[in-house]
Amino acid sequence: GIDQALQDIQAELSPSFPLNKTLLGHYVGSPKSPCIDICDFRGPKGWCLGCARTREECRKWKAMKPYAQTLLIKELGRRKKKLAIQQR
Image: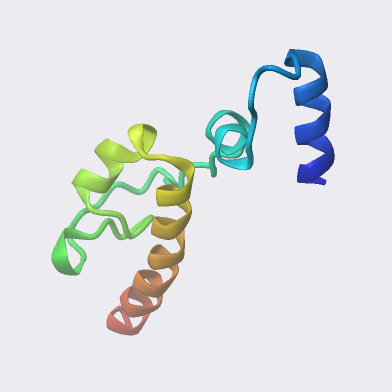
């Protein structure tokens, strides 16, 4: 699991280099982009009809920390439900 991965990386780097889950997540734990190549921003509040992000959220995705990306992905699930209801 994640704890074993941390221990393995720590052993390779050196005991003097502090490593924590946040640092590990920054390098290897970033979520995959929610983009599905349907970039149509005509949804409510400018949401993309494909991934439910705004243009600004799309632009900022790569610069966001993994924790913020994960929070946004959770929010996108709620937005997609709203989009599905509106498209009925």
